[in-house]
Length: 208
Image (cartoon, rainbow, N blue to C red; front, side, top):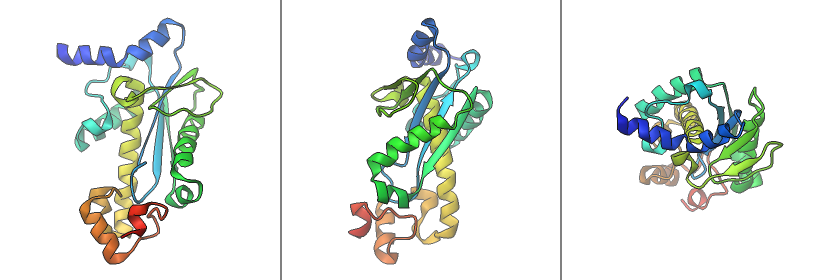
């Protein structure tokens, strides 16, 4: 491992290091993806990394790494972590309860599914109720290794879901846009109308 990468990982572990010094070892990172998509579920992942294997080379905010690297890191993280869990909320429920409530609910569901009860939860800028303290961190997926790991698990999981949906609804190009509002996706909605996994409460869907 190069010195530059080593130092980056040291900084990325700062929150976790400070907690461990104070006797807190079961640290869960949680993050969601799909909040801004026009179609498909919102997916959250929660993960508790092993202290002995917390240095994972290349780990970063999922938006800052390539598809292939995310796939590699997904395998590394899920094999080396103490435990992880994934939760999702479909577009129909998002439409019913609103995006904001769905976002909070899916984070809580992911934490509840963990096999190990966390002592503390680090979240990417969102607070929600849990029996363990929840600490929202602004840009958490860029400065906490636990949240970054969760963001990668959530992103890879959701991408796989959208690939499967692309086989059911091939006309929308979900394998490429993953449900987000690309120019091509908007044109497809205008041509074919929304499909069952589109979020009808989103202005960009019905207006097209």
